[in-house]
Image 1 (spheres, rainbow, N blue to C red):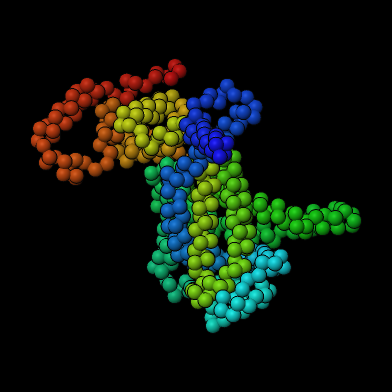
Image 2 (cartoon, rainbow, N blue to C red):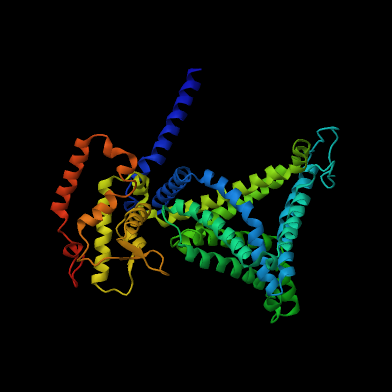
Length: 499
């Protein structure tokens, strides 16, 4: 018994050491001094730790729940606008066939899993008659939920029917504006969840939402239809002899290539969402890594759904005709969790140089915020002073100076709200000063940070103690006397010298 106890104690101690290394010690290592696989391993552990920490701290499960509701609310308006464009181009039937084809490819995996599990000896039993259910034929009894793939097909056709009933002529101009506003509003909520991952307090402006969302909503379906209609196989085999062409056709139709294309297209789709939705620039490499992780997790989730739905017929006895609802909700919810997890991966990879500081960025002190605000304003003034072609790039500044991106985004947002800095239209992440450096004092910048948020009067603090209010006024007066006459221009490095 003592030997078992000693062994268990050793295992517990090893687990505790591994946990302590993952949470704390790994951040103290100098990655630059590590070589080869050792350095790569430390970086990987840091990325994984940052991803799971961010997934928890950013409340991704809660955002996924909200996005589930928003997604279901947006299906009909988005389909209506997209199919209306396809109808105008004369490709509405092609678009519907493509959607049906993708859904059929998905549901066929469900049927294959049901049949395979049945023949492997795992038999679904009817909860009432206790008789085995043939997976190939699952009848609908009294309107209860029968086959999940058939029910999904019914939902798709019902969605098309609802969209066909949307008459833009009957809606009129006002109704069309309301429909477009619904789509923009829902997509804006999706953007807010991604902005939370990247630490962006402010989202796109209303005009940018209108242009960005609708352009993607209208252009992408058209490009997808165009790509799906290209004669890729015929073009690839046109200049080959008959035997080689047959081999190419066989390879293009093989299961391996189909599975590979599923992974590639899923990666590109998730990568596009991860890079497009947040109101910041996401580089291609981190976006694709996040897309790969999301694609693999999503495909695994789909296969798991195919396995789990084998016994789903029994829930028809509980939920009746509503049996599909909890399954669809669970599927959409987990799918959004996977997408947000991929966004966390992209953020961790892109901001790999500030691992340790990202942990502390959420609890930055007022002094730290004021120091960063002054540094940002001075650097923006230097950019203006040097008359550079490119305006001040906030993200590049964060990476060059190894400052947490979330921290920088938060402080820049406060400076923008105070009217000291403004983002250039059409140049995401590039800011300029809204006042001349000769007119902007250090006190103005400090006040932008100190006075950000609700004023003491709004919280009833001015009535607590007159002596405290008087003391605060004296401190503010002393601060104005000491730095009120120091202007940003006085701190800007003259042209031709190195900052």
